[in-house]
Image (cartoon, rainbow, N blue to C red):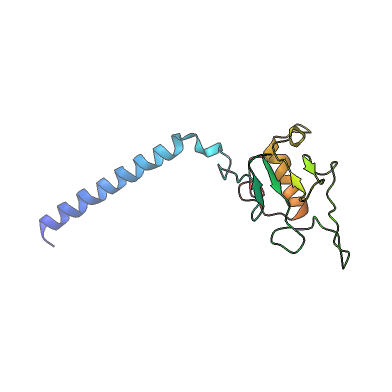
Length: 137
């Protein structure tokens, strides 16, 4: 092999090792090692509508997507099994049942609001991007 190729490969190998070492050091120094994932949560569970005026999420009907087990198993009329004891910020009066996830009740038992909402979503089988898969609790 020509001396030129040996020198070029050697320099490239040394540069590669130095660059990878530098990137590894930067990754170790970042504060992201203890950051909860995902860093952003959706305002409402997936496929639920958001009402800006009241800062509430509309509970979809029993035939729509992502309702999990919040409806009972009665054949003809599946009643909503949520109540103010198991769901903070629930309002069932009016045309649509809504949940206000900014209600102060979500911060209970020493948990953050996201952790309380995560427990609620996982209990009822609700998929909520940024909440049901939150790992910071």
